[in-house]
Image 1 (cartoon, one colour):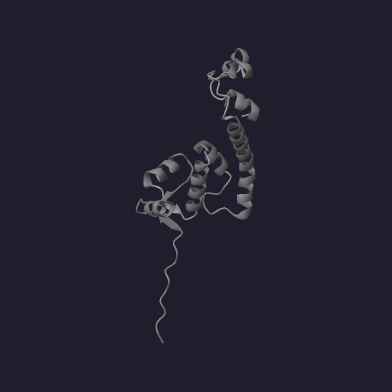
Image 2: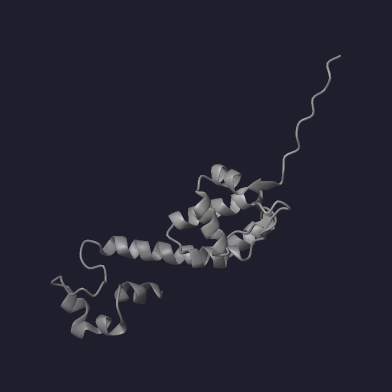
Length: 157
């Protein structure tokens, strides 16, 4: 009878290099995320940085959120409701998605407004199109501040 070989136990901790390889982001980016409080690590007895395996899920969430145009501050705010020491449970994930939904709805509304107004005026206050004096008499949006004031007003952002 052949001897059984033991399968090595899957470590719950990953080195910074392993996290970088598995997540597809660079080591400096991991350090940056950690400095911003988005992820956390600890030091082992040899003073080497170690991450819990659950950090891979957090990094995926961060990358997707950035792709959607969210700032790191917004991402941090949303992630604050998730545990840092384990992968989110279904209940924890549901709580996060409820919180996130309002922000995403605002983004969708803004993108739809932008899409519908691209051909004429996007509400930037630049005053370079013929319609602007009609839509923005006496530069009332310019008096409210810089940027897309008309769109902000319509989206309430």
